[in-house]
Image 1 (cartoon, rainbow, N blue to C red):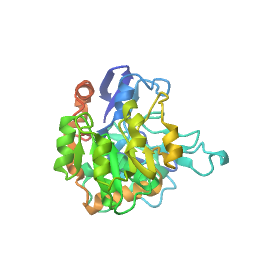
Image 2: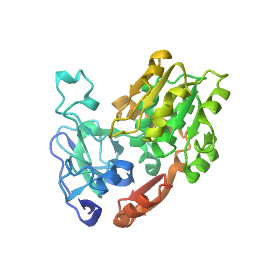
Image 3: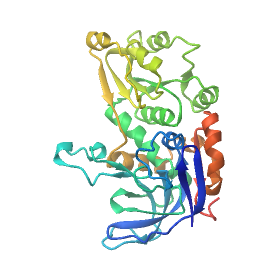
Length: 341
């Protein structure tokens, strides 16, 4: 049993893990694949030390199979292929108005409690979603970020024929673009990284470097001079936020996906003048997970093209500094079982 631990800023260690037998209402999962995401890199930098008790196993994007079932679990069986929706909402109160996925007492598995960078992971059964038979576990490891995209597109109310602009072509931005296109939108991607630009174009998207192309002019040209119906801000760039109103049509929608840790100036006059709407989005709800799973099972999205590399779990300490230095990689997976290629 192998586990990878966050041991403090810029320090990841690999060692023996502990198999935790499932208690009532829990299951133990043999983790097949786990994905490294931007949040994990923030943790690596020490930016979330106020929530993590090092040394701690981190990670939350994963796929695997049920290895053991605790008392009271009836709808899952040993051997089932599953993914985990890593939200513990047991501290929700009526004041959260039923929105348990963003309740004030929310705990995130892999941050506030041990995560998926280990061979065996024991979790509450309410976090587990069963996969359809035959789903590839490598692709299924993208369920969590794909669910983010499903949530963003759903809250953005994307409709067929609309023009959607995605600012930022990283893993989440690319998934948002895929889901928006699947919903019938025409999609433009703005991205400055050459590798990601090339990938977006290879996947059939119109993709442009906003430092080389005047994006508002391009958007007007693609929309009969009206502007975009919806813009997804996935870059986290202050400059991108400042330019959002110029991209939008009257009554257009901004879907805020990226985390902006510091206040950013926004031209509120344009929101007033054009009756624009700003929509915040955070994580996902169970229906978004189910939608993501169905999209994966359908094979209708080119998700495998986003998997840049697959490495054994015991190589994780080498990967974090390299991913920090090279922003080109899209999705790097860890193989968490000795016999998983």
